[in-house]
Length: 134
Image (cartoon, rainbow, N blue to C red):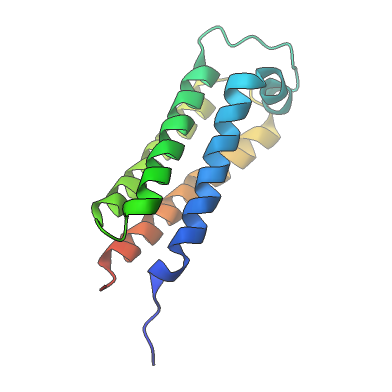
């Protein structure tokens, strides 16, 4: 029986994550009313603490690191550890968003709660990729 090669799907996973993080950053920076309309049901909501902009900077950083890593992970597997860290940090970012914003709509909370385990599954996937023999 042939051993499953986790790294076979890594480029696709990274392209998907780059697209998601870029989309989130774009919405955070340029379409905050859209974000607040979905998350709070009120597009006029004002982010007095700047949490959305703060999150958008994180998503931009994630996308940039994943783009660099996309081209370098085969040469240096330390990039897989960076991808693991990104997913874990994003889980904490989401958790802090859920617990610090009492005005989040229930559907938004449900979606955000679902992203946390998805990030941890992705971190596990990157861990398995890092253990795979070249």
